[in-house]
Length: 575
Ligand code: ATP
Ligand code: MG
Image 1 (cartoon, rainbow, N blue to C red):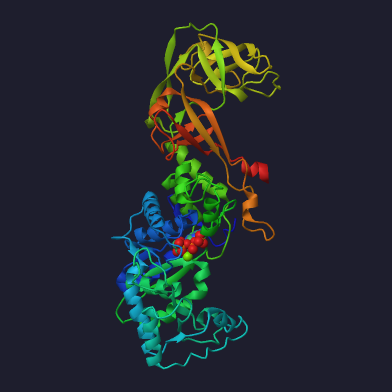
Image 2 (image 1 turned 45 degrees about the vertical axis):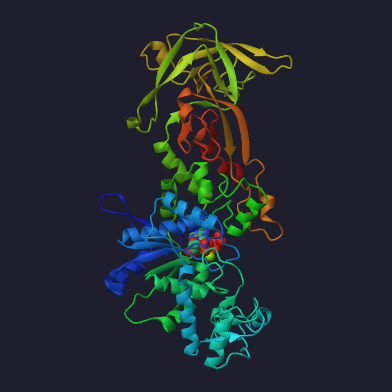
């Protein structure tokens, strides 16, 4: 893990952990000290609505909203919708839902770059009028050829020195739809010799005859990202425009445009870059995630194996665990890869505190307790969370026939097998000690049932000598006649390679983990789970954390997802 420039926690005198400022907080505190921008802090989260948000976006959301919260500021949600070719209303709605679910509220209504098209157009005219923008008639291939290389200056366009009048006329005609896509473009007139390629007369407006999901057919010219982004920050009085590192080289252009459009006395945004989140075993490109969805390699954007926020939510992640994770990894200035185990650790940590313990048997094996009366049933008291007494207790029915997990029994058990075996004893959690007396098999030799006896004096918590008797294993179980049925989906990591997108010769899809989903039908749960609501989370004792699927679970037809196993099995297996 690259943590070299991550914040290091310092210990205060009281001993509790006190984090030192990260580099963005230091910049903000310096600005506040100097009373820059009247000491207000306004950040924004600016997604492009061309896909669902993923865990990388969650990092950016927690950072932007977190900074505003810390400094009494505000955060805008702004849809960067300048590309009508790829954007959809479905994505806008999902993004709003995801930001809210993470626990954040943006300032006022959600904003859209498309709402600023008029102002952006005016500013383009201003650049033309002041001689800092021109219309180029060349095709884009020609323009890229003239760009030069990082070490070699570019070539000036033959249209670079057009008169202001001619530029105004052509730009107006571009806007009026007189030209086809690609026939003309508007460029900022900066410096074809600049060592920064982004300053070599970048394109700021292009023609695109395409209906926009908000502005309809009003426009057939659309601003480029670099032109729209900084100016939208400026329109919204954003003070600190936090973005990922790849935009560092765009910063001179961001500042150049503001220099030419800025009015004294107004809030002037400042761009600050941080390292994007990369996670091991995870794909984080929206294009690749879309491919998984379109090729039906997953069930949708919210497939519980997807690193999307909606996928993590459906898998059973809590907003608190994601916020904690974002906080733990801190803000870095250099690219690094975070171990996905850290995200899972943060999740287990949260679920351990909040998830009630319940009993569920995924692969049932029936036991008949021959010396337990046929019509008897007992309701046994059991704690809901040993980590938190305030979560109380519940009662669970016990009867003559119970289910245990198939792999908690072995006929020819090795010495170290501390579960059930012929003539061996185990404790049934919160109940009695049982002993296996007989193994029943079908014609093919498959074990179909066990016959056991129980020790009536061994009831847990009864205080008797037998209740204190130590046996090696404790098993979870459910009563056959009380059990309810459920489907359980065992999810695992979607990719079995640490860096699925990092192979030159191989496509990332070749690393899809074929065992990433196993569906179990006929699982048996304790009866109290009958009314479990979608998204409620539990620890199935000895098995892991599970949640009720928010897509497919229905009363009477329960579907549970495995969120995470109790322990990280990957680091052992794969290292
Ligand atoms: P992708 O590369 O997945 O397509 P993007 O950067 O194009 O993502 P946007 O919708 O433009 O997606 O991103 C919105 C905001 O989220 C931007 O400010 C961007 O910098 C930030 N962001 C995107 N990916 C990450 C990441 N992996 N880590 C941190 N921030 C991210
Ligand atoms: Mg982007």
